Structure formats: structure tokens, C-alpha cells
Image (cartoon, rainbow, N blue to C red; front, side):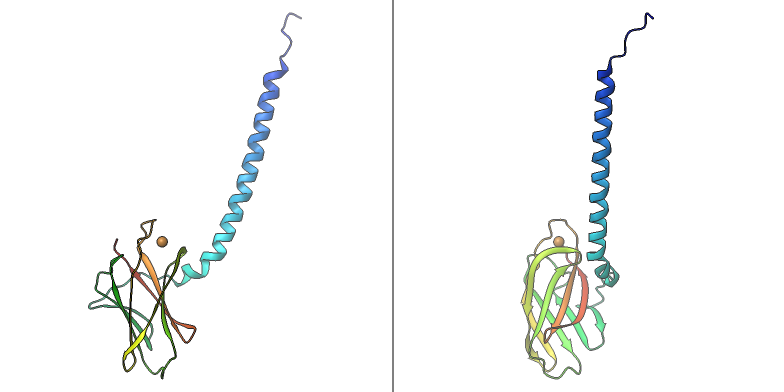
Length: 160
Ligand SMILES: [Cu+2]
């Protein structure tokens, strides 16, 4: 009988607070799963193609298919330095256009394409510059586009 009447205010506040937290977490969870789904859809096919960057002797980086070979010099490849790209083709005839498309896996770095010029039979060369990635990630990708078709994908490390 002497007990003080319950003050409803703190309870009310706590209740509003937990309701707010609940809504916050639900919204966060929905956003997070949407982002996970979205990025999963975008990155999955690229990730499946990723292979460790290889820089064997000389300047040949790797060969996706025996008919397209790709090399960058000088090695090691450095950002903000003029680079020489070389594409060597076997049994391709005389393509109309060869483009080296430089990008980073799972990252938007802007368009960076080098138009290759024939230097001798089956050998095409071009010069370009790779910018510094703000994230510090080193893995770059060169797609070799021959007559508007991607004919090769090569991965290599760039030193900043
Ligand atoms: Cu980047």
C-alpha cells in the first residue's frame, strides 16, 4: 500500500528505444542482405575467373589460350610508368582491331584501353599507363579484345 506508484515514463522510453533499435536492425539486415545479393551477382563470374598473378621469366605474364599471348614490359609492372603491351597471335589471320582493355577485378577504375598496332607478323604492340588504385590492391586484368570479341584475359600485379 505504501509502494510508490510506478512511473511509466522510463518504461515508455525504454520501449520506444528498443522499438527503434529493432527497426534499425531490421532495416540494416535487409540492406545488408540486398547488398550481399547484389555484389554476389556482380562479382561471382569475375571471381571464378581469377587466377594468381604469374610473372614468369622474361616479360610473358600468362597465356589464357595458346593462340593469344600477352606481355607487359618493363617488369615488374609499375603504375604511372609508360608500359609496352605486346599481343602475339597464332593462326588469327589479319584482325581488323586489337584492343588491350585494362581494368581491376571487382572494381570500377574507369575505361583504360590501348589500341594495338601491328609490329610484325602476328605481333601487336601498344603503349599505356596504369593508374594507382586508391585501395592499394595490386591485381589488374588485361582483356584482349580482337575484332570486338574478348579473346583472352590475363591477370598481373602492378607495383605502386
Ligand atoms: Cu582499383
